[in-house]
Length: 204
Image (cartoon, rainbow, N blue to C red; front, top):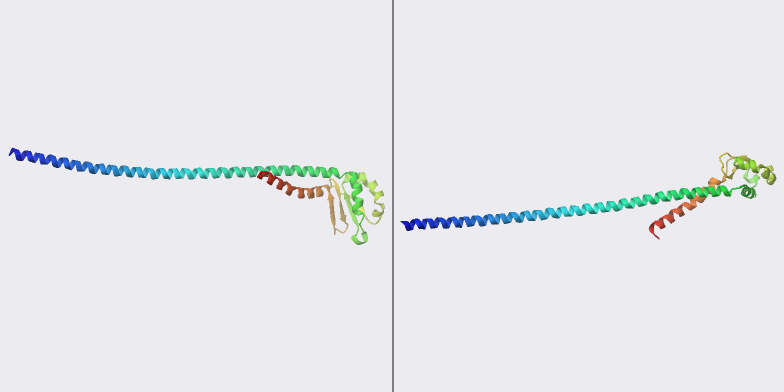
């Protein structure tokens, strides 16, 4: 009887140990699988975060470069406009200064030398009020024959320098004013200035 009880006890112990061992092995496998899953998930999330950070950094870099390029373009445009305005001012001042009394005394008679009133009609020569006051006597003498053909010298309050020649019937208008001549010079110089600035911006 004692032997049977001992065998029964031994069997229970053996079955219990084996069952516990199997359960422990099962739990270990589940834990390992869960740990592996967690690690894989963490790696994927880390990869996503890293990729997003990389993309954000690239976008930030591109945005920064674009902003810098735009700022450089804006600065160049402002600089060009300021230089152009200064150049326009210098040209205008120099042209007005060049249109002194002596130049008008020379240029106006030459401009009228080929005028034929029978073919071209009567003309008016428009001068600034100050210039006409100072040069009226000279032109009345120099252009005496021309004045007899119908030419008239008239003041133009809007002229700061230079002169204009206008047909009395309004069919023609020749603008030799300082402003007009300066504008023509600037129209030629400004594209060249823009080209120089573009080449300078390229470092050439």
